Length: 421
Image (tube, rainbow, N blue to C red):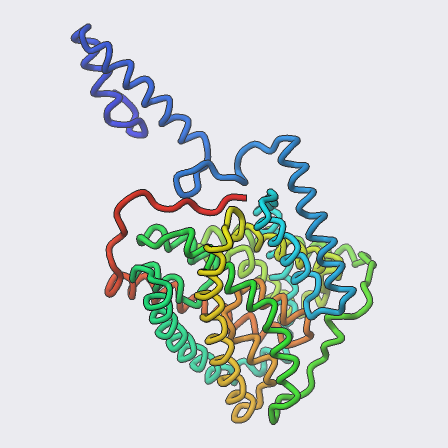
């Protein structure tokens, strides 16, 4: 009996050929189809095409990967020297995205990106000190505010994507969702949304938010009553090249990183590579087991890698496509920023939450990216990470239900391919 993992037609055709020699042609067809099926099983796929990051790395692909990191590193250094807010990330993002649009191949190792996201989780988790946790009960009102903010952003975004972008209902719902990028790209195609549209719209959203949010937060904070001062120099200080750390702290942080990433994937946490290490780091720091932070060089490397990975969403993109996504993603981003500024002003006025901290905690720029922004600007990373995690979980729970109730069927025809580097 054929194995249940084999295609059904294999056992049917092979049995027919054994009893009737005239079935040889069908057998040859079955052999060809079986070889194609086996090749697909052996090659990891992404949206019907070979996965670009899980195939065997050749010398040429390794050279392209190192070249991408070099371009991103030089762009990040330029952004740092120009004293841009979050200059390492924004500089790397702008230079590699420009190269991708120009037709250059800018591949990025998503495994490396996952590790660097885990490093950001360690850094964000280190903010959960006993003093911070004593104020956690005061966050219930702001979490309700995040839920109301997400509902408004979602409703306005659907109208923009439908009327201006001409998207079908399901794609519009996923394009408007203020959720995590990786989760949206994983859920969207399975529900009938166009993966290329989702990649470009959400990639543009993240790019615009990362470029504008630090400037908006730091420039408006001084003019908002009760906002408090923001120590922007924390993001622009002299680079600390020291990697020294007690072996005990190194072992604790390494265990939080490795075990957290694996545990997060095992129990299917949203943004598992960030939230797993973040939770374990928060537990170890809140319990007083360690007070160590990842070295600054690792944080800089994380900025460069995360900024460089955004360029993947602009590969093989024409200017016409980019302008269309800029109109949608940029318009949605401006709406998100305006609403976030209004909610942040309310948090600052009535709840005594610093304006910049509330602003960074509200804008849907991605859980890893906004955690990194809060760390770089010297804000309350625990507050920011908790609110973004709540937003992602809320979207992941509510979006499939809303799509099932109000989404349109998957469009007929071959889906558009996911952008490849």
